[in-house]
Image (tube, rainbow, N blue to C red):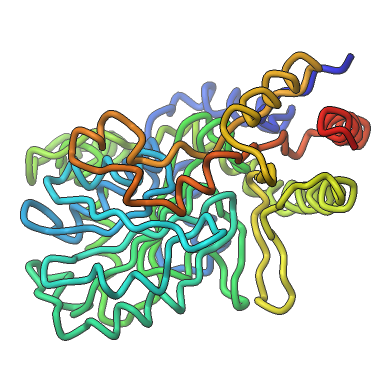
Length: 401
């Protein structure tokens, strides 16, 4: 019996050597490697500027703080996502307004979106679940339709003069829709480099933003750097320069900077990312082909018609005509056969934190219908053809096919 883990990181000798070199350099906190990684990410995403942090959650929260979102404001988030999408809204004192999925979709109900936008709405946070970019054109249609309701309360909000779109692209680095890279699709985009992500730095994240002539990119980047390092006017690298010890603290801010150790891994991973994405696509195409006839509904990752190329982060399937108990039994049986599977995600209204805020899953029926029989199968760039074949054979056997 094979043992197939769910999503181990794809770390090789080049990443290990890069970490050794960073350690031997004498510079291990935020420094030259982090700055180089930020520049490479901007090139990859075709964006103006990128700021790195210690997590995607920090990137999302610092974006909200940059935009001046706070008490009295509302931020629209999907009910079908991980808690980080909504918890950052709570961190800044704003109110998360949840939107249900569309029918038979893990993405938000775009038809319902305009109804949730009002004078208090400042930001929408779409989630590229599984690595599939959202339909951002439809999101901007809703934003423009309600533009006259927007009430700016910060200088950046005044520049946009409409609800701002902040993508939770934790899963979708390297994806495309309508020929545009993730990073170009929303006003601001946050990425995750957590251990299970397509590109990992162990822990880490980044915020990038698309070209906008009205924005002062240097000022935005500087403010994000202040947020990430206690508001200190000089980072550690700048303070090491001859006579450069003097500094100021602009505000009582936060501590969420990326280290050069993490960035060293990221630089190698980013170089390898195109090949890793190709491997994921090959595996998805194999799964899609070999699991036909198993009474499964598979997430669509690629579409020439929609000009869609997913990052292939998660292989999510729905067990047709089955419910929670049968889903749980299948996951246990897969584990007994050496195949680790998972569920993405338990909708937020089912979690205690959000129940305590008054959210109820009965108000989000589509999210529950997506969740109740969803299973995520192993998908990672180190998965071999032989291992993928074993996963398929095991699933087919357990489903009686």
